[in-house]
Figure 1: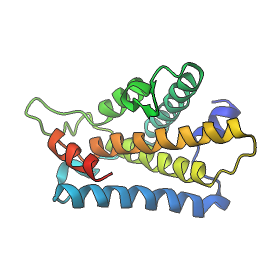
Figure 2: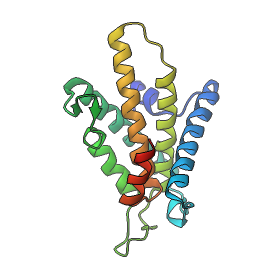
Figure 3: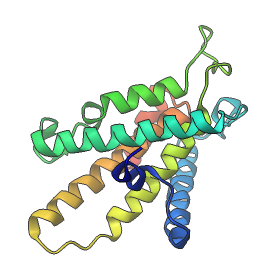
Figure 4: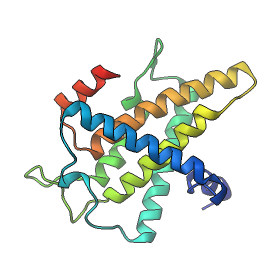
Length: 183
């Protein structure tokens, strides 16, 4: 892994404990809000029962972070998924969302496939996104074009957190629709 990849995917430095805590808190509050709106507690499909081997976990986490950066960068260059003021977040991150879906596979009966599941990696990545969102919200860039870029990244990252939280919480379409009406 090169230095740029390490800087973009690693956990916050020890001095960044407050930032990591803020990111985790943001995600926990988001999931708490989702549960409140949909009116259910997290079930067995929403918790980590099997841990991924540390080297595999680190590799998959790095892959998710790289996909985030690559797909975000591509969208900033092309603005393909910008429709008016709205971002089509599912279209900005198709590879990343497919990877998250692969972390959370389902058996033919609809239950979580515990033998192939990498739920802990999905949680790690979601917490990383929370930290990224906190960082974006705290950013105070000077040039106006940089402020516009940060605002757009903030909006897109916030929406991506919702899409991944929906998957982690195993929401159905009706539950997703009910939650989106509250936002």
